[in-house]
Image 1: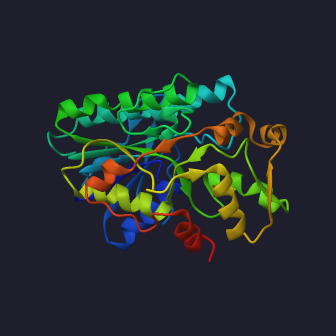
Image 2 (image 1 turned 30 degrees about the vertical axis):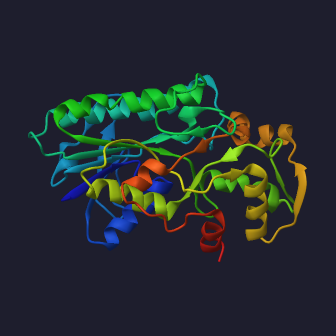
Length: 301
C-alpha cells in the first residue's frame, strides 16, 4: 500500500490505527468536518451534507479505511440522533464511493469498512457466522444499510472488506468505559441474568486485523472481527472487576439506573451475540489476545 485515507481517524480506533501506521512509516491522511493541523497527519475537509471532499485528500492514496460514524454510546438515541447515526455512516460511505468514481481508474485498490456486531441483534447462544441474517432492530438495520452503502465500490474494481466489530477493549474508552462505571462506584456487578454472550476484541488486535486485511489481497467480503473466546456477561464482568481490583457482587446491576446513566444504549448491554471468528482465522490472521484474561492483563497492568 502507498497511503491510507481514514474517515473517523480521530475516533478511538482511528487514532490508535493512525499512530500504529505512523510508527511504521506509512502515509496516512484523515478526513474531518473541521480540519485543523494536529501535527499528526495531514487532515482534509469533507462535508457529508453537501457531498464535498477535498480532492487533495486522495493524493498518494490507494487504500481507504472507512471508520466514520457517530458514537452509539455517548448520546441518547432520540429520533434526531438516530438520523445522525445513519447519515454519519451511510451517507458518508456513499460520498466516498462517488468520489472514487472520479479518481483515475485503479487508483484505489482497497476499501476497508467498519460495521458492527449489532447487525445480528440479540441472538442468545446461537453461534453467529457471517452468513447469519440481519435482525430487525434499529441497530441491526443501521448496520445492514451501512454495509450495503458501499456495495457499488466492487463494480469499480475495488477490493472491499467489511469488519463487523464487537466490543472494542481499550482502558477507560468506548463501551468498556461504560462497563467500568459500576466498579468505579465501588462494587461491580453483571447485567440482566448474566447469561448473555459477549463478543469482544482488544484494540491492538483490531488495528492489526485492519492492516492484515489491507495487506492480504485474498481477504474480501465480510468478517466477524472478534477474538476467539466469547463468554457470558457474568464471567466478563467478574474478570473486569478483578482487573480493576474491585469487589464483584454476584447480583445484577439495576437496569433502571443504567438506563438513566446510558439511555437506550443500556439495552445493548443485555444483548447476546456469540460471534464466530473462524473465517478471519482461516485467512491466517492470529490474535495477540485470544482470551479475555490476556487482554485485561495487557490493559490494566
